[in-house]
Image 1 (cartoon, rainbow, N blue to C red):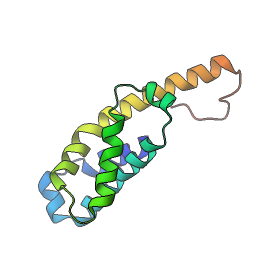
Image 2: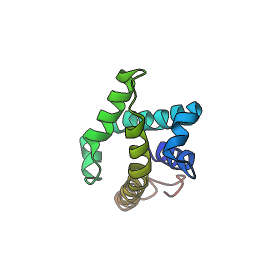
Image 3: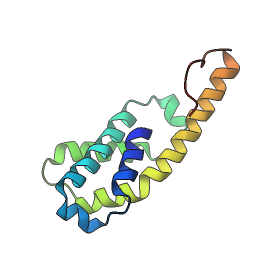
Length: 119
């Protein structure tokens, strides 16, 4: 999720909403990022969701369902709003949750997180 959110932020950086109308590759890249975020979110356990309670889990998953099943009737404005407002908060919230989980791993099982890159 973090990777797809970072990709969306990077792809949209320096771009405008009008660019989505002119650049089909940009639009498809952003749609793919939002779909990937939603797919990953759908696989997060209830316990995992409780560790990041400020994230709107049902909305994240719901956006993915809309995109996957809307086929060619994608609301470009909704994609742009989602990409410009959600990923920065998503990245921050998920990174905080990952740091918390990593810290818990280190406290509960010495060496459990050895070899993993820090978040």
